[in-house]
Amino acid sequence: MILGLFVVLAATMASKIVLHFDVNETIILEDIAGGDTREMCLNKIIAKSAAVLPAAGGSWTWLDGTPLNDQTPQPVSSLSTTFELPPSAVPYYRVKSLKPNALNFTTHEHGSRFRGIYDDLVAKMTHGSLPEALSKDGNTHFVLPSFFRTVAELHKSKRSFNIVIRTFGYDLPEIAKSITAFAQGLHPDFPDFVAPEFEVTDEKIFEGRYISTDAGANVEWRLSNPETKSNLSEAEALELMESSRITLVQDDYDHWKASGYNPQCGKPCWVTKGGGSTKHIFFDDNIWPDPKDSIVAVRQRESEGGDYVPMSGEEIMAEESKSIVKVFGIEACLDDNYFLNKINLCCTANPLRALDREVIEVFKVAYAMSVEKKAGRVSMDRFIAALPQHVKAPMAKLTEAAQYDCELVVPNVLPEVPENWAELVCFSSCVENTLKRCVAPTDLVTFLRLLCGTAASLSGSIEAQDVDVERFLAQIARGDGPPCN
Image 1: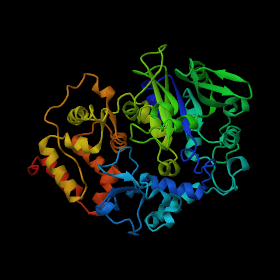
Image 2 (image 1 turned 90 degrees about the vertical axis):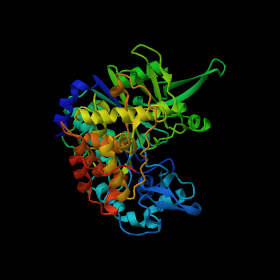
Image 3 (image 1 turned 180 degrees about the vertical axis):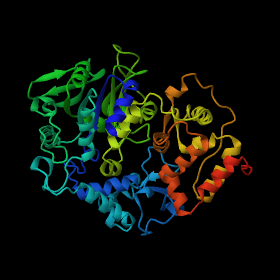
Image 4 (image 1 turned 90 degrees about the horizontal axis):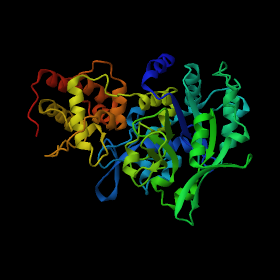
């Protein structure tokens, strides 16, 4: 039960959370500024989760090795909703030669195998009877139900939280109407939610801009409101967002684009090292595992009262599932608890709490392997590589049988791990999702079983090759695994 979940975790969370939500393909499935229709956006979010691998002659294959024109119908589990993909894999949407097909992806020969998923999304977005402020046609959700459910459940649980809507586009007036209607109890799915404090007036809609100061020597982010003529400094803007129940911000796309999409020039988010009384979490579909391309500019201070300084691209990547969340539109659409689960993960003090000692030791080794080049992010591949030899051997055979390319090399020398490594470690999405399914005490065999069923890329390969996972896990349990090649 969601209510109970947040009450239980209250002791491990900051006293207040400020939730920042991007708009396009995060909480709505259309792009008003870009001119993309709902149908186009549904195709795009599938293309963003369809991973491909480079093949000979400059061609591409799907993650399971099948050619792009293979039209065998695929389930949702065949898509990749993990922050980090297997080696060499990239989203279809991110390949320059393939991206033009994204807007009509599921009617193109490449994406026709995913048409059933498109139909599932359409069915989920169809309601039947919605007021004008909540639907453009009276039948289809404008704002995702998962967003409204998040607000309603947090409000019901008496959680201290604020909402900040963030966009580069010009869609804030329409978003404001929908949120206001929801706050007035007009949403038929949430008739008992009446919260005037979440109604949006013009005084709550701002422009966030980077302004040159000191004759161009420095750049500051400021928040202004055309209605009130206010012009807030970064500190004043932060105070506003941490005290107002809802704030809408149009961010500075021109500055971000002019910088070459520099991570330090995107939509700002704020982090206090070691935690603090307020925790900010930023949801955006355009967060990528690329240190040179981030839409969220995370700024950190050493302690409360200190000055915020920009984090590097690598440091920002390590904040995924801590202060920033890469949103996969498919999951946000199909799972009404999507944002609630992500908030739970970001706010949980110790994600390893349900694991027994042996599993934690593997994570410690995997962290040591990841700390220098991956900012401490433990992926599925690095976790498997860090397994003790008698466990890694059967898992190597399992990935081989599944035709899943897994890098299992461990460096000869690993850096020393600090005592607080468990506070510093972060995870790829597939490892993160596996940790969410763990119930204490989770042993190593149980964790690997959950991992094989949760990691979309591996589970898809296991299913495609009809691999008997339990046969390999039985070898681990008996301790009679074959030598690892």
